[in-house]
Image (cartoon, rainbow, N blue to C red; front, side, top):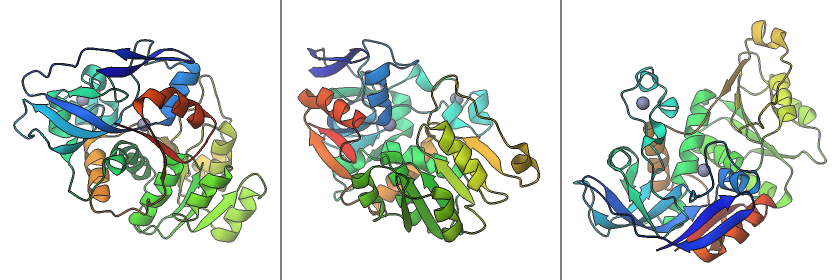
Length: 338
Ligand SMILES: [Zn+2]
Ligand SMILES: [Zn+2]
């Protein structure tokens, strides 16, 4: 089968590789759609501490069951598959932190989504693989994984139906967070970004959209929610934006550092905001299988306004060009289709 193999920063090669053999309890999935994620782009550009040369990138997979040795799936089932799942037994899992599971990376969809087939280990098939309803297209189902990360992120930020949510960042994740908050019935969402075509999509999912290249975020927030946002998602890797978020938060609000920050970055923290104003600074990383299930259910029910979100569809042969376009913030969301 064909795979797009990552060979180190700036290098990707199309190679021929053996089709993985599913073992007992496992499933072989023919990849029909795999989203291009910011993590894939970052890894391609700069490398990644956890993803070394030789890996196959891509982890937002939807496809068709080609071989099933798992009782829950049959050949021909259309499925969404998560790239990892918690073990449910380790200390972190027992304490209710599945995304911090110590055994998270023991089992993964091999070799990765930028390939014609992936082998789905039993733990993933049990916990993070769901059969698509007839109306759910593969390219939409490839959004289950990023949406699951957003479900986790909004939960950590305590978003409820009465929230005023500030999202800083107009990348695919920030846009999904705004769409998700709307589906959850949040009172109001303000999204701030800097890329005109992404802000155009933002206007379809957020109540107020701020172009940070020409508008003052603090003034816009003050006009939108004088007491400040109850919840803030910082979905751009910018320490300055995290500082803004802490300054702008409502008293008692939660700021979630959703985007991964570059190594070595530090932030002077106004501790009066933390103590007297009870502003909580939190973070979230990845998803748990409950988040994955919720994201799947929302997409299966077509509960999110996502028309126009997937802007680019490319073949596996063109993954490298897609990663370069992602680095240039072209389009909104790119999906590799096969
Ligand atoms: Zn991703
Ligand atoms: Zn665990």
